[in-house]
Length: 119
Length: 113
Image (cartoon, rainbow over all chains, first blue to last red; front, side, top):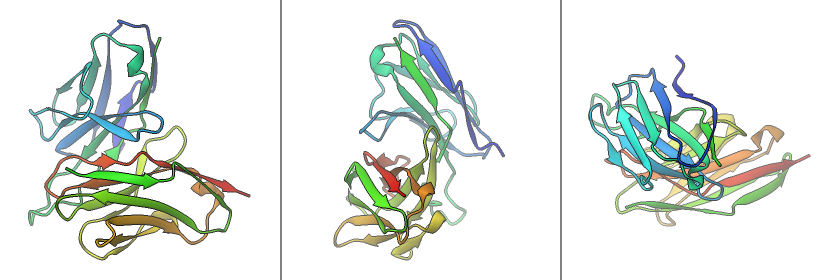
């Protein structure tokens, strides 16, 4: 199992350019997430998808859009990149509740990240 | 709503010394709590988690954490630091019925030879 994979690993954009970050998981997880990581601020949630067919805004959604393409894939799009979007982006996934109705503990599994620079 | 505070953005310890990373949380319901580790240029890896079972939780690489409800704390410890423990550590909290995690700002650990 590859777990959570992200492409690309690195990207440099000019202000105003657009791009899509790709994320896929092979763990049959229901929920998927996009975070950004900035120094001294921990991880901040951009968007998440609790299950296939649903997406919701997180803490910092402005300037981003997402698509839950299928159960495996969750993409993040920057329509018009800005220098403030320079960051490291992480995708994560989480499994579904257990058979008894109790959650597995809500832990999320993370991809290796995409380092994005906007000039 | 829940939140996490990690005390100390940087911790420096000598090899073989105790590692103590502090985490305090706020939550309106009994929470689930997590510690993640991030090695340079990598994603986050789960160290350990608390999900309302035993209050002393053992994780990977010799780390453990104790849930103290009265102090709303979930501090991470390791008795003897190793050079390979140099990394950034994140505490996170979740309400059991919530899909989301809230992360602390992180603590960077350096280990001196």
